[in-house]
Structure formats: C-alpha cells, structure tokens
Image 1 (cartoon, rainbow, N blue to C red):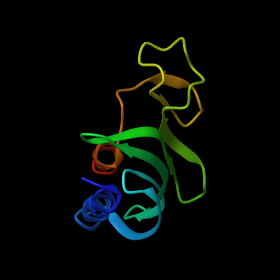
Image 2 (cartoon, rainbow, N blue to C red; image 1 turned 45 degrees about the vertical axis):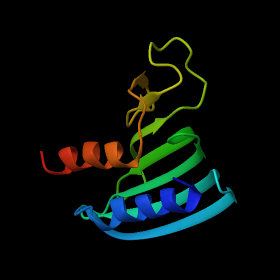
Image 3 (tube, rainbow, N blue to C red; image 1 turned 60 degrees about the horizontal axis):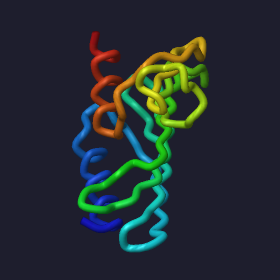
Length: 125
C-alpha cells in the first residue's frame, strides 16, 4: 500500500458510511509512503467530525498522529479521540478520549473507521 491507496481507502470508508451526509477532504502526499489527510464530515444528526491523520506506511499504514473531533450542530464538543502525548498518566498513553467536558479517558488506538462506528452507535442508541 502507498499514500494514494491509503487515501482511496479513506474515501471508500466515507462513501460507504450511512451516517455521513457530506465530506470535505484534503490530501497531501509527502511521499509515496507518507501522507497527511484533513477532513470535515457532516453527519445525519447535524453533528460534524473534523479529523486529521498523519500516516506513515511501512508494511501497513501507521497513524503516527491523529485527531478526531466530534461536535454538535452548535459547535460544542461531544468527544475527541487523539494521540497527542499530553496525558502520560493514562494506561493507553498516548491514545486517549476527551468527553464533552474535555476530561480525558483511556482509549484504544483509533482510526477513522473505529471512530465512525462509535459515533454511529451513539447516534442510533
């Protein structure tokens, strides 16, 4: 897999996701094995997911840096998953989740597909 193939994978995830109404994506190919993706997804409940991914592809894609920021129609944070190295006390460091009050909690490493699944569960609960 190379950077362009990874970006096509992201596009396919978005086009096959039933909770996404529209998307705006920006792709920067730094090299055939390194890329940066930034996106805004509008969802069926009028919330939005803003995300950035910095990917390095070795044998498989590695999300070196990621942030998935989910907010409601009034621009209030619902949740955010990221791997910024600012909560070393968490057992899943650097991966973590911020709730709507910005408190931090342990989180498994995330990717766009996992985040959309979590959001979908929340929308349809």
